[in-house]
Length: 261
Image 1 (cartoon, rainbow, N blue to C red):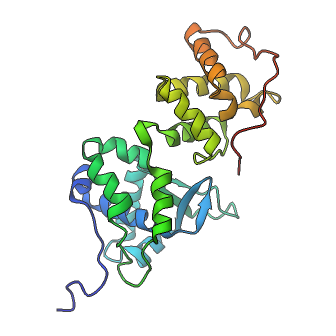
Image 2 (image 1 turned 45 degrees about the vertical axis):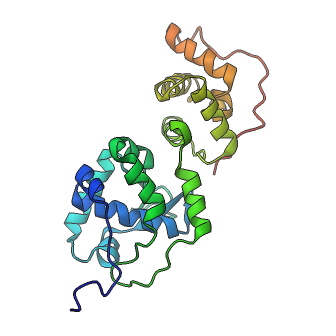
Image 3 (image 1 turned 135 degrees about the horizontal axis):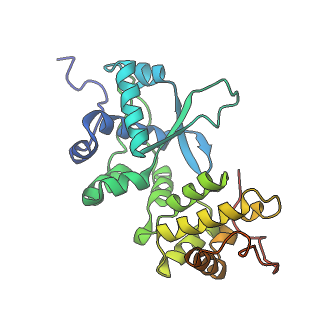
C-alpha cells in the first residue's frame, strides 16, 4: 500500500484543529516546524520566507493556491501569524516572511494551553516535509533555545509588550533582550498588566514620536524603568495635555538596555 505512511506525514493536534480550523491547524503546525529549522533570523525571531506558490509546491501540494491564500489571510487576521515584507532587499519583492504569534495562539487556546503549547514546543519535533521526508528534525540544543524564547513564565508576556511598542513607535527592539525582559517582567511582578503597558506606550508615542530630541527615548529602558513607568502611567490617568506634560529636564541614564537591529 504505497499510499499509506511510506513518507513522513503531516501532523496536527486535534484540539488545535477544533479551536482554529483544520486547514489553519495544518498550516500553523508546518509553519512551526519550518520556524524551528529556519536560518532567517530577524528582530530576535526566526522567520519562514515563502511565496504562495512555494507553500503549494513545497508544503501543501494537495491544496490550491487560493486555499493557501485564504488560510494564511485568516490566520493573519486572527493574529495567530505575523507576516511582513519589510525584510526583503528589494521593495518590489512582496514575498512575505512569516512567524507564529505564540502569544495570540496561547490566548486563543487558553483552555487547551497545557496540551497545545507544550506539545508545539516539545512533543512535535518529528514533523518533516510531506514530500521529501528526509529533512532533519530539530536538534536538542535548538529545542532548548526555542523553548527558552517562547516560554513565558508566570504569564509575563514580554513579546506582546515589545511587539506593541515596535508597532506604535516604529522601532525594531528585540523581545529576547535580557535587559528588556527584566524590565517588563519586573513591572508585571509589581501588578501592572498589558493594558498598562499599552497606555504608557500610546501616551509617550503621542508626545515624543514627532519630537526629534525625545523620540529616541521611545525605548524599553526609558519607558519601563520602575520610576518612569509609574510616573508615565499616572500622567495617562491624570489626562495631562501634551503642553503641560512635557518631559522633565532631568538627567537620565539610557546607556543600558536593548539593541535595535
